Image 1 (cartoon, helix red, strand yellow):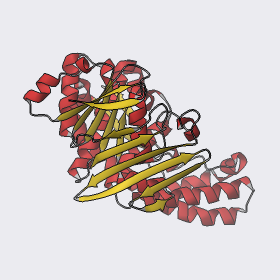
Image 2 (cartoon, one colour; image 1 turned 180 degrees about the vertical axis):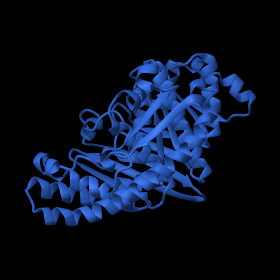
Image 3 (cartoon, one colour; image 1 turned 90 degrees about the horizontal axis):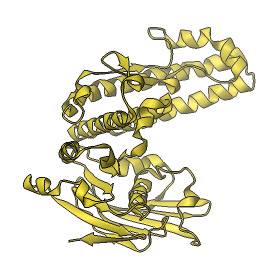
Length: 361
């Protein structure tokens, strides 16, 4: 999976961008505020339909411009196709291989994007929603039926919640329970199966972060462990109806991460949390490569958390994932390129200045 060409017009401060990325490693260098993160953000939009910095897509349009346009040529398993996105105020048009699409899942499938950015610590520090998204992104790419299972569960959950809010009869809600339980069991199964496979890849990154060798990751299903979900729903029916929503289920699932028996939030510093999550994301990429799927990996200013030795280890790990990598930094001296060249690593360097991007020979 690689982006062979990229065009960006009127996206934040970027204008007239036309680049041919390297299929392996791309270094995006420039001072703070130059637009280097915006370039990674544009690629993220093409793969996920949204920014990793804001939910307000209109803010991505350059000041005074009516719209932004993003176009990428993608090479995937011997075939080539184009992804395009145009955003006008209040409306997005997304085209994939010549057809207009409306579902972001189609983009995610066509251009898998993994992200390492300064907010990585949120996966450890903040609520379970971040950890569910991390888990489900991985399951989506290795389990072909996952999106259908997940969509079925969300659909029935919405119907049950609507019946609870409007004080529907218990008989009506029990009818929804049958479908909900069936979808929940399948969703729980594929998540657990995926996590078991992911955990097997985690020790391979102990060179980057030695504590990874002793990590424990447990999946909590969203209701009491060992309890039958159908019975659990019935036992909490009155409480659910009083609150107007379903309190328990896979939509409340979580990952409990411990280091040597201690909660990772308590054991790790902020910087250590970022490096730790980096290792988890790299494990996901390695797992996907095992399934014959590679990703485009965006790394935004991560080297600021690492010394030179760890940066070299990280670059080696990135190369081993099989991903096409875009990594930003304020100075090319942050990257031990001479050592990379000695290992035969291929790379390109792009310099960003005041929204202009040019290749550096």
